[in-house]
Amino acid sequence: MSAEFDVVVIGAGIAGISLAWHLNRKGKSVCVLEKSAQAEGASVRNFGMIWVIGQANQEIENLAGQSLEFWKEASSELGFWFKQSGSLHLAYHPLEWQVLKEYASSGRCCEGRKLLGASEVSSFSSQVKTDGLLGALYSPTEGCVDPREVVHCGAKWLVQKGVKFCFDSMVTSIRSGVVSTSDGQEFSGKKIVVCPGPDLFSLYPGHYEKVGLYQTVLQMMRLRPKNNAENLGIHLCAGLTLGHYGNFKNCPSLPDLIEAQKQMWKAQMHHGIHVLVSEHSDGTLTVGDSHAYGRQVSPYSDESIDDAILEALNQFIDRDNYDIIQRWRGTYNTHKSLPYWVEEIEDSVIALNLFGTGMTLSFGVTAKLSEQLFAS
Image (cartoon, rainbow, N blue to C red):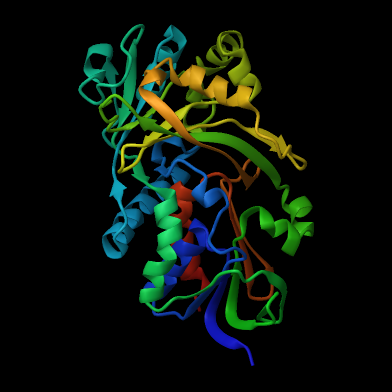
């Protein structure tokens, strides 16, 4: 006989963890199935940034802000490290500075965001290079967690609150409210939520074509400070980021900046590199990333891509102050226009995919879904 739950969640990444947290708070019985000994996908291969400022429209930015508040609550309740770090977008080229000024004068620049002169930046982070710096956009709304701590330890914390986790449980079929796994077990759920990231392809391959999903592959690194380097204290990025996130898309000078970057940063633009830096509680930095898109992606890391990331990083912090301690590749599903996807794909089976927005939007999206699952 199968074990019965209010909700069976497939995937113990940040989508599954945050959904289980919301449902547990509502008194629902939850079982989370994970194919591996621990989650090892995109949810642990990212910056740990809650990047509120990067959203393409006000509706999604508001959702990111709601998610940030849930992150604060969850960190207090479950005991993981969280810091509202804020962020600096640094400008070293006149067109970068112009784009930031255009954004600052738009209706999207709110929540304490403001322009800083070059001389003011050091008060936020002494590690930022000031040679050639024209100024920066400061935002207080961005948060930081260590994704590995949150995802790997989140299951242990939630088990103590009554959530059941089954690791090394590969799902082989979903039918009539029953999930079967490769070890012969069955789990019955009034609702089943499928959030396994790219593994959605093996469970529901037709939905890749139906929804228009494709894969993004990235390269990232973790750096350790040496020679007693001071902490950054804040999330950092520079001009290459301005063309990546949708919040800057309506700035009139952005097209000119992108054309200039094709000459200034040829390798970086070719590999879809925009450099973000987050700092964790132990002082290590996560740095990245590159972007390759498609249904078929290379399994091989490319050292020249890491070199291009570090070259761009060196524009705004001193690369020589850090040792590389880890390198990795990540893969996640994405979509040309949607920030995330929630759909009932068969009776009482809901698919959830977060398209590179997992850490930022997860708690907000799953809060909405937890309300909708049992709405009358």
